[in-house]
Image 1: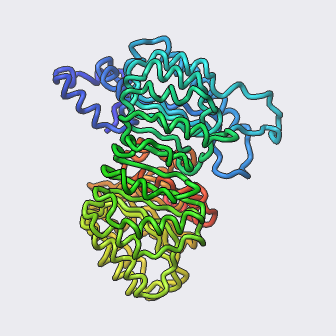
Image 2: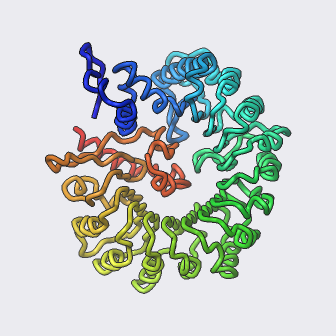
Image 3: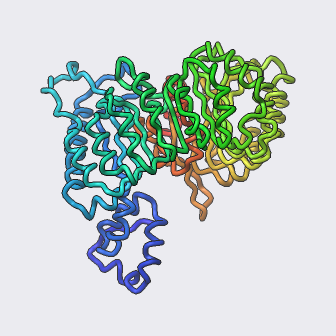
Amino acid sequence: MAIVATNQNTTHGFSRLPTELCAGVVKSLSKVDQRSCLSVSRLFRDLARPLVFSRVIIRVGMWKATDDEGMFDDDVELMERRVRRNKEKLQYIALDAQFARIVKAIHVHAHREWDFADLEEPQDKLEDNLDISLVVRALKALPHLRSFRWHGISPALTPAVLDALAKTCGRTLVELSVAAMINDDKAPQYLTQFKKLQALSLAGDMCNFPHYGNPEPESMVTACIQHVPLTVLRLSVLGDSVWDTPLRVLSGLYELSLQRPQSLDKLSVVFQHCSQLRTLNVLIDNVACKPQFIAALKAAPDALPHLTSFKFIACSRGAFNIDPDLFAAFLKDKKAMRRLDLTFYNPFKDIADYTRFLDMFASLPQLEVLGLVLKGEKFTREHLQLFDERLPLGLSALLLSWEFRSVVDIQKEDWIAMLKRRLSLAYLHVLDPRGSLDLCKLLLKDHPPALQFVGYGSCLGTFERNFATGEAAYGPVWDEETAGFRTVEDFGCEDWEWLLRNHDWNSLHSLEPYDYFRECWRHIHC
């Protein structure tokens, strides 16, 4: 439903309806349509304004998917427009108290700086991408801010910004996420001022921005982690600083994310003290962690009895061949598990090995969200039949990394039939380095009834249907910036964001499938 401005009195009928009913209509609209409401009438503007501007995004710099991409004149023009827009947004917040009251979230997407030397017309140094003093002024005018995220590494979060945030929003902020922070001795004391903080991330930004831009970031994170408020329920930490988290904080956590620790020899501490934990996310890229992780699982397979979400991602392919039986023993009695993402690269030796791996999913009756890697030499009809039998029928989201060298006696229609039996499957994402599991066009003709979102490699987009005609189409592919940051707000579903979280850009953006599937999308829309 789209509401557009016209010269006619488009609100004649709506003016007779209760305001509460009109508010419900506006809330049910898409973000695009809510923005259209701003120019319909005063009533619709007043109803849509808090929805459209409750979250303000500050985009800094220019996103580039890979290091070898150059900078072009159009890119510089976009960056300059962003400088102006950011200035206008921040000044408006600082000067308009009524507008400031409706802003509940400030999210900064801070990209790296670029060298403009290779442009045809050399530019003067681009105006500073972000005026930090304006950020400070805006924060001082936001008495009801609940969420603050600083994603990216350039520019880094400054002590002045954190100080203004703590002093103004110390009693309202519930979420704080920092990817890059200038080293500051006062950082720990700032944390203590957030009296209602529930979600804290000091772990970089997913996998795209894992570093803080400081020579020794871990010392700063370690200092901060020792002053985490007891109100925090969700904690994400970079490196080994997590092991300095006070036990009184660990015992109250509902979610813990370990981002690139160099050691897991203290993982038993988490198993022993995080008795309330519902979600555990582990991202490791150090091969030394493998024996420590195995030892912890063997020693305490019954740990974390309330776990409902478990993510384990090994970034190094060759070094993390872990016996699936260890995971099976760990998951066996966790009947409430509803989200599971296991990314380790064990090639299946034979059908018995493959079956043992799949059996762990069959033992989880509540499983709805699943990410897994299937890897081996030959994929047969028997493999697909076993996959169909073990995969929960109630699945709502599936991230499948598929790496078999050859396929025997299977048609693409067989995959579609298997997927269609998952009546709740709304999100399907395929990571296929060989480009052989291509269901892109076939899904338009035959698809799971609940399908809403599809991904191939780094190509992500909505799956749209005309229920009157039965025809289906892919919506526009997400631009690289949106796919790189991929926030919950972009997905519109926290489960989907969680499933793709920590899968680094390089693995999604491998050249062959990226170009192949983007061409599929382009061809469909032409």
